[in-house]
Image (cartoon, rainbow, N blue to C red; front, side, top):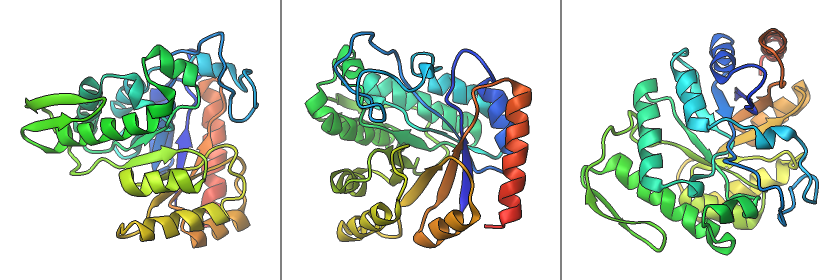
Length: 283
C-alpha cells in the first residue's frame, strides 16, 4: 500500500513545487492538488460537508490552477506521481485540457494520473455552461475524447457535448494509459460509473468507514467484467497502524494525507514526522 500527500493549494503558504519536492524526497508515491475555477458568491448548491451554502475552508476560493501547479512540481521532482484530487474537466475545453495533461505527462516523464469529480458546486458548473443534470454524461464524453487525443494518431469524437473531426494532436503522453480516478461518494451509482469509465475511486472527507464501500466497488468492478482490481485512494486524517493494516488487507491502493496550510518550515516538519511514523508502522 502506498502513501500520498495532497496540498489544498492557495495563494498563501507553501507553494506546490516545494510541497511536491517534500513528497518526492520522503518517498511518498503521489502528490495531489485540487481545482475550483471560482466560487460564485450566491449559490444554491450545498457543500457536501456543511450541508448548506457555507464553505468549510476559505481555500475553496483561493485554489491555484492545478495544471500550472503540477507543472511547477514536475520541474523540481523526479519520482513522485502528479495528480489531482480532484479536477473538474467539464469546466474546460476538452481539446485544450487534453493538450495540457499530455504536455504535463510528457515533461514529467510519464508521472501523471488524473483525479476527477462530477462537481458538487452546480452553480460553478453552470457558469461554465455545464447543465447540472447532464454533468456525468458530459464528464464521460470529455474523458473519452481526451483518451482519443492521447492515443490515436488521427483522433476524432462525435458526442453530445464534444465533437471534432479527424485531428492530429501531439505530444502524446509517455504513458500508454493515463489513470483516471473519481473522487465521489461511495455509492452504487458512482461505482457503476467508475467501473464503466474510470480506473478507480478517491474517497471523500465524509467516507469514514470505507469497508463496505470498498467491497461494493470491488463487486461492481467484477460484475462489469473489468479485469484486475480498481485503484482505491483513501483519504485519511491521522495515521493509525491498525486501521492502515486493515485498509491494506481490504484492498486500498494508496492512503492520502492532507498538508497543513502553512509556511515551508511547518509543512516540512509535518511531512518529516508523518514519513517517520509511516515508516515505523512498516505497512
